[in-house]
Image (cartoon, rainbow, N blue to C red; front, side, top):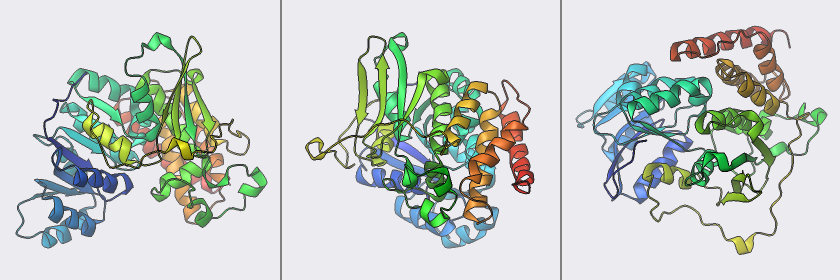
Amino acid sequence: MKVMAKHARRNVVVLGSTGSVGTQTLDVVRSMPERFRIVALSAGSRWEVLAEQVREFEPEAAAVCDEEGAGPLATALAGRKVELLSGMDGLCRIASWDGADVVVGAISGAAGLPPAVAALESGKTLALANKEAIVMCGGRLMRLAAQSGGLIVPVDSEHSALFQLLRGVERQEVARVILTASGGPFCGMSTKELERVTPAQALQHPTWRMGKKITIDSATLMNKALEVIEAGWLFGLPPDRIRVLIHPQSVVHCMVELVDGALLAHLSAPDMRLPIQYALSYPERPPGTARRLDVAQMSRLELREPDYEAFPALALGYRAAQQGGTSGAVLSAANEEAVQAFLDGRVRFTDIARLVGMVLDSHELQADPTFEAAMAADRWAREEAKRCLDLL
């Protein structure tokens, strides 16, 4: 396993620097300039925001995935000493940037897989916020990290918590792990009630402030379904040793049940800057600026079983985790299409999981896909989801 040098100022690449995790990563860097330096940034299409970030952090390189944004970005940054890149090739190049220590993978969706591969191939520490990459091809990514000397440090709050709890714990001592879910804005609603919810209502998360897609995933519990698959790959756990509980306060992020009955728990305020800072600093734990949890102010902590009937997406996650192979890529891609269809007003909230289930039903499993095969499964699932839309 790769071990970062202690106390050295770390050079950081942020993939997806204009999104929620990306901007919070820059908050962490901004607050700790003695520890971190930005060497490269990337955005999808928001070249104006990227240009502002380049002016502030003065990286060596910047990339915009949307080729149409390359020209305007170059014009906006004319005269500045920064190498400008574009497209997927540009993203992969800065993901393997010479001299970078940590690459933050905060690109949403399947587009995050190729640069994640590039970062690990070059032996970088990958601070992974893009759960779709490991859901799509987790086995290959974990093997690649082991072979190249790279390291994956999860940024998801639950998986960061689990990563921290398992330090110093022998794997044979673990009976199971418990991931918590806020339950989203519709916790406690019946299936009939959920049929009537609108995109505007689904985007009102009670605890976290995130991008649209992940906010909808939290509302359907698909986010937790993906995290079950992610936990399996990251920590070598079968689905029957991963439990999910609803925890509306979002204070307990993960628990580890040991074979003797002891229970370890990770608690913190719901602030993504904490797991981001941990991933950037690992294995150190310096003081930071994330919100602190005042345990004396906590009146109660609720933990209860999920409603699998009202939120069937979670069961789909366990199904894909059990099947393995290309099921994760298909689940993730079909869900992206279904979420967009819901946001566009083409399907009901309850149709999201139904559509994903239809695509999984028609999928022909590949047991150990290559990265190319996982991307092909992603493309197939998107087309199949569009076809199934007409059947709803």
